Length: 127
Picture 1 (cartoon, rainbow, N blue to C red):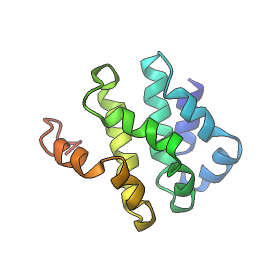
Picture 2 (cartoon, rainbow, N blue to C red; picture 1 turned 180 degrees about the horizontal axis):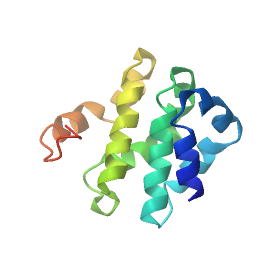
Picture 3 (cartoon, rainbow, N blue to C red; picture 1 turned 60 degrees about the horizontal axis):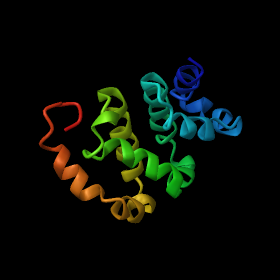
């Protein structure tokens, strides 16, 4: 429930900086490896919320964050295919793709192939 609360607070763009300053990015990152489905879901939601803020995106370009975000969207990990976490991971990537500064890192992680693969997904929200 703590991850859920932090993720919800981070949905208010005016509160993203205090959430980050309090160390929530590291907490969200740790939540990605939780065995609990809801912890992973809210960790991804928190990252998706903070990814909307352009000046925070430099932090999210770091390999430790991108590894976790991309681990959710890769199709070869069916046990991590919670639909809500998947949508939020894709939303995070979409937010990062809005800034040219992030393009080279996203390409490095295979975003073009992943994006094309997801165009064939049956979930219209993912497409």
